[in-house]
Amino acid sequence: MAKTVLITGASSGIGKSIGEFLHSKGYIVYGTSRKPKHKEHNGIRFVALDVTCAESIKAAVTEVLDAEGKIDYLINNAGMGITGPIEEIPDEEIQRVFNTNYFGAIRVIKAVLPSMRTQQEGFIINITSIAGYMGLPYRGIYSATKGALELTTEAFRMEIKQFNIRMTNVAPGDFATNIAAGRYHAPVKENSPYKKQYGATLALMDEHVDEGQDPLLMAKKVYRVMQKKNPTIHYKVGEWLQKFSIALKHILPDKWYERMLMKHYKL
Image 1 (tube, rainbow, N blue to C red):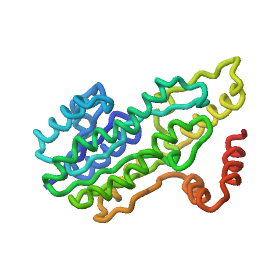
Image 2 (cartoon, rainbow, N blue to C red):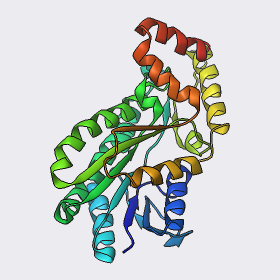
Image 3 (cartoon, rainbow, N blue to C red):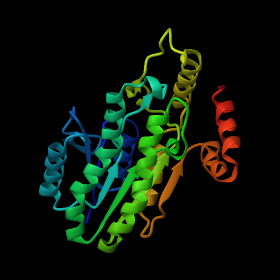
């Protein structure tokens, strides 16, 4: 019997690639976006879901359960980017990105857990980010949202293991998606003391995304993780140097690692 997958943020980028690849592997795939343009596209059946609204989440999960009777896999992929000097990012923008990237994922998990507990089985995969393993200059708030989800997953998976529900993180590095276009950019202000550094770092970040890897690599990795009966806690997908930078953080003294990041970003 085909397994049912629910993927948040499936209309573009990594979520879209995961959904289309899983469909090709025989899964029943439901994808969400706030305002779906299609009922079905490339094998993904779309439902409306806004991760910042509990009622919207409940309605979407109910729709999938009514249609399929179960949700075997939840892939929490919906998210948004944010850049800027922390001092200059408006409080409401900080709250908005946490509401989407962190609290949104928690809300969706809470919505699917009762049905997974009833069926005594389920697998939840949180798409985080390699940026969540380190505080990156001018991406500190984004790093914080993804790091928070990484740590929460560590606790959550121990709590739900008794119900035979698995949970893990898959952290991508830079992939060629439209996240740069969709992220909130604090403006580079003419009179800002951060103008020179932030402007240069922003250009470098966009370059990394434009030159990023094919999202299909993420889709294939998520598929391989889904086959694991006893998944580990953290998976990373990206360029060798991006993954190695996480290992270096555990090896190098803090200030050495900080200098390495500053050199990379030419600060």
